Image 1 (cartoon, one colour):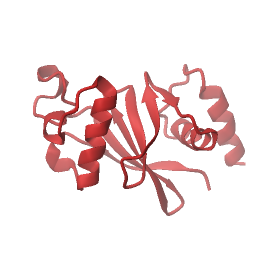
Image 2 (cartoon, one colour):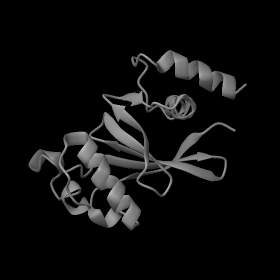
Image 3 (cartoon, helix red, strand yellow):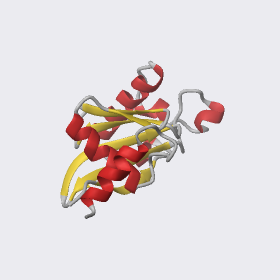
Image 4 (cartoon, helix red, strand yellow):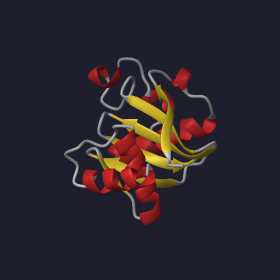
Amino acid sequence: MAVRFVDKRTLSSVEDLRSPVEREQLRVVGRLYDGEDLPAEERLAEGGPDERETSFAGFCDLWRVVDGDRHLYDAWFVMVDSGSFFRAGTTEEVAGVIQFGLECADPAVRAQLGSAMVEAKLLPRGDSSYDEFAALLAQQQG
């Protein structure tokens, strides 16, 4: 079975976070995004990016990435075109998203995530890797 994105949550306030790990993942995503090490309260501050430059409120999606019933990764997408992938339930980053494109040093993880991003329509057709990942997805689907 192919890896896929499920259970999308758009986070608008710190109350939307369900665990200390999610709070820490958000802190790491923010630091990777703009270099500022801010707590979850500031990253999801009221007003969002229109009023607060460092807030992702309303522009922060959290997905679970699964293989069948197995939760593999937590996927964070912020400010439309950026994000991070963590091993499920940890702060170990395995890949990133920069200007919509997937950045990953591990070829196996890159293939998993790239084809899943195509299937979930999270990777734009104009991305230089789109055709590669679309072909992988087609192979996985038979």
